[in-house]
Image (cartoon, rainbow, N blue to C red):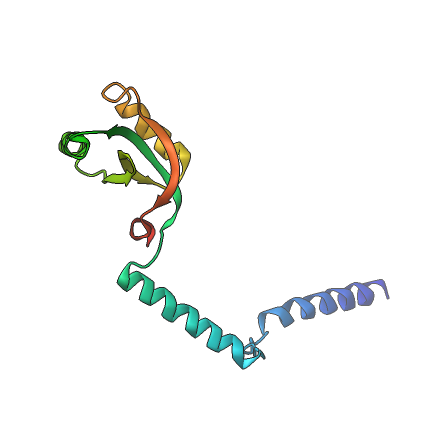
Length: 144
């Protein structure tokens, strides 16, 4: 009697294990409001238009502020510093920003403050007044 009970328990437990192997997946059906599809489509069109026409402000990020100048020849001086920087670091983008009365030179498109600080440590000897600023950075660098 005991043997039959053990065999019965083993057969019942093994049949439940086999049931999992033969499970057939069925496709999931999603029922949603049709307006959701139209909103998603509109969102995609707006994003495609903005990327094609660069009508966006970018994403939150950081740059390194290198230089600022005001007064006579301030634009030419800032451009000179930018050109010197670009020769030393050709892979790092440099941006001249005008906000009356200053021309500012900021470099890089860093997604995190740590990345910006790391780059700052590389250039701090040549640019001792440099510091990290929070700003919008170019979106194109973060696609893919």
